[in-house]
Length: 166
Image (cartoon, rainbow, N blue to C red):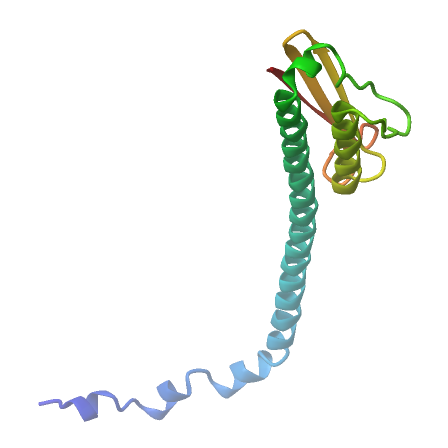
């Protein structure tokens, strides 16, 4: 009758697992395996770093898009507050090279000056906006340099437009 303690006892040649002659031939195999593992691990880590860098760029681009949408609705709400004047075209603002703030003493000019300042503060000094109202229908557009997030190197400028009724 076999007991549990006698079942675990193996002859000496089986406990060693590998004969001495086999062990002599396997010396150095572990070094090559370690080098291959380091190369595979390094490649994986470099891929993760590149993925993280791309995610950060796209996150910044997404933030800028969100800011542009908020800015279009910001001026639209200001125009709705002053709807009678907006219908006359007082809020119309065309694209220009350096997007100067209009200035002036009216509420519409003050709103436009503040809006242009907010665009430049949020999206960069090269960003600009445009407003074109025709009666109750207004088109508000904002463009900025999105070279970080845009995959097309020759077209880094991104434009968001919103069309709404006052």
